[in-house]
Image (cartoon, rainbow, N blue to C red; front, side, top):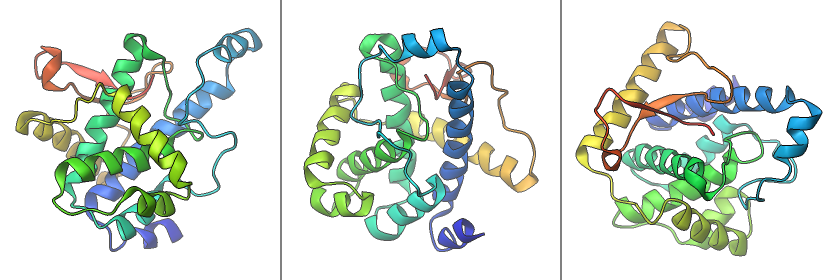
Length: 215
């Protein structure tokens, strides 16, 4: 209830994206908790990521998104673009840069950094990194490092075509409808691949092709 009140004055896309990411986080956490000892040992050998916290943050994804929406002052389109960037980062990770799951340990840092990158690319006026660091509850040094790491992780591919923007808007609209109808998630989860979203224009795939949002 408190989380819903936090989002009362936020753009609708914030609540929809929060719900989508919360479901992804819950499923990735469940997958991680269900790993066998052998699999967990192998996973521990994966390259460390600056986006993974050592402890799970106390604040929920929904409250964290509400905080960003309240203080960042960015346009609603920035949240759609941030969603695009997150998908690009995860897709490139599976192509060899190092897989990163969106779970309780990584989602907050990924969110604040993706929104920061989207704001700088989309909006004419935005707050600086020091301000975003305070909003995100991290240090300025960490915010600066996460931004650089994020840009390299997406290959500095920040441009979003109108077609791609429309594809991701469609995914969020579908999510919104499911939330309103209280129906099942749009895509059934199988293993660690958790949520579907449209491929960006640089994949050379048809519009019916889909990409999973979790590694």
